[in-house]
Length: 369
Image 1 (cartoon, rainbow, N blue to C red):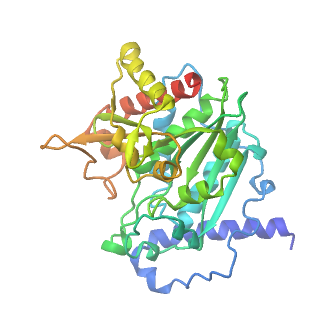
Image 2 (image 1 turned 30 degrees about the vertical axis):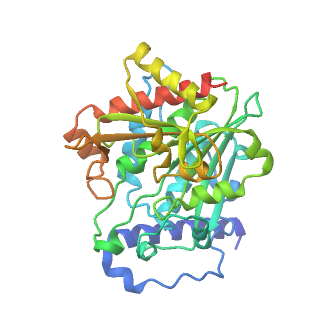
Image 3 (image 1 turned 90 degrees about the horizontal axis):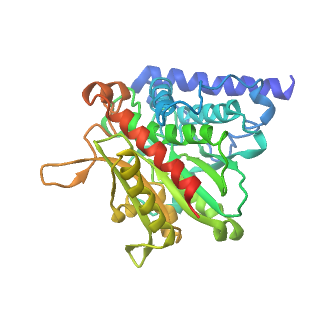
């Protein structure tokens, strides 16, 4: 049998098994085989020739309001790629779709990299793991970061990141309902996809590196692996890392700009420029972005960059509790994190925040020097 045909059959079988396991719920847990660490599950999966004809992308024009395309991406991920747990086949199928969408936008395969990493990469992360997080039904030995590089005129690099996996409550609560991950983190992925689409029509001075991180929920593993893999030249050229995670949980648009100096959120030229751009958002567009510098230490992918000494700009959507403290709403990490429920319970909130964060990211890219 032709090797390409065989590989296509294998990919189809992987995705079909993933769908069946998710559909059958907890009854199949005991029937799953042990993960064989000696078997490379990634053989030929990311051969560019296997992706075939480029499909039509989601409709877009520069006349569309910021955030409108992002809302379509959130809904698509929410409805078609729910329960995309770390190191799972559902996570893999999401990564395949991300590659297909970037190709559909018109980006060349040469600008796309799929960076695979084994479960052993968990050791790179200092974040404590949630017990039994690797016990979900469709566990596999590998995860992956999907990376898009958009060259610019400058050697300076802006990393733009968001994780695409979801938190798995199955092993903890034996809860087999779908987890859409509408806010956590279809919102962040959607922001990156919309921005990458917009940058097809806009001129970027700095080189843009979009990273869709895998295995975040199990300890920021994809982010730590990515940082570990950076060359000395890449490290020297990174201006800052922009992180998008849980953008539509709560009415307040929060950003954290700074870098870690002996455990404090210190400011520098980059973070001060980010502050100026955020302030201009209110003056020019009536969009209020609330600074929270200590947020650079939040347990999301930017933390791997903070610990490595890079400046970060982290974005999130938060609520305020009765004591006046910022925090996440209770739907996060549950089946209630669904874009349809969010829109029903808080009409217009998701659209408003995706609009604001989309505009903020674009201004950072185009105006940062």
